[in-house]
Image (cartoon, rainbow, N blue to C red; front, side, top):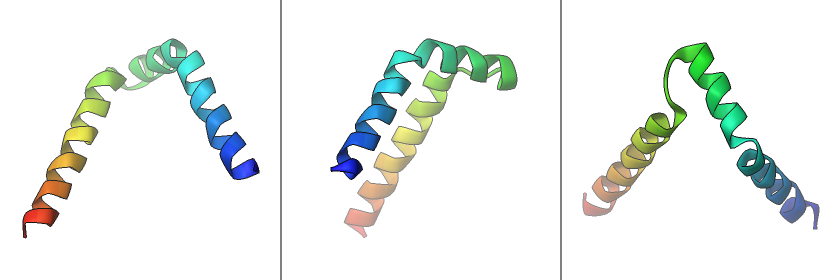
Length: 54
């Protein structure tokens, strides 16, 4: 039961405090987290497609 509750709480807190997390990372590294997430997502998708094809 705990293995379902803890990730749900973590995801809820990330969604709840997304703006503060985004602002903190932008102030620290001068990079928008949205761009970083898009790049990581596309790299994961491309690597999965390459692994499936070869």
